[in-house]
Length: 322
Image (cartoon, rainbow, N blue to C red):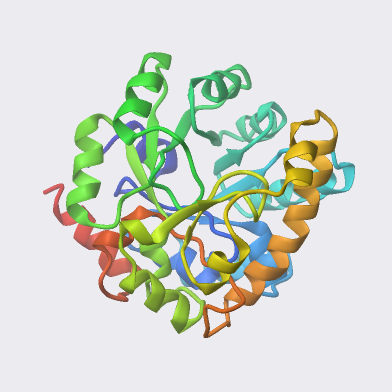
């Protein structure tokens, strides 16, 4: 099946393995691309979590597949050191032949300018129309519409409502959230989406380097086990309810709420949250208990009942398009 997204990405199947901190290890990214979808590199996971020198990590993926891969650029904030590092990562990705980029947060214009200069394309993560318009003003080629069933940082709208809101803007739209089965994949394409991005389904795969406990928690969870918490990053994060989350709670404290309301102080508060969540997320890769870590997941857990090779999942999804 060919869509505007598959033509932009140069892939056969309109499936993205979404960038996941900490779960986007090279083997998982490569397996999805090799099967005909698009694996997305998450550079902080590649370097900080999985221990690769950045260029060497990209080349490790290239050892496993020659098919197209993508790159995730988180561009929020005014931290000059982070911005310089992200610019370096993007430059290296372009040098190594990456031509599909997924931007998240912030103004994507500077990424678009770099990528368009060499014939690449940029899609932008959005949760509502106003962010989509800012992405379009920044020159992006497509949108990834994050709905309220997504894992991790989630949206507030249904997949149907979000498509209706964004379709008039005229760009290809990829759906992100709530897809764990081939039937759900086909249903999102029938809505008019040009592709579907999956995260949780690809955590429960043989290639994903995370703990057996995390994968088992996904298999055992149902929709009602997925909750939103503000206590991790200062914005709603979709996680599996476990002992740790129940002890931590889901609402930000009064001081955090006050900090998050301020135009400047919200960035300090989010930085504090981010530093703490990075440490916890990295530890969650190996933790075999649910007593001290949190596990991100979306409502697609309801349809995930086994741990399988990522390539098998992509091929199963492709089969419903025949």
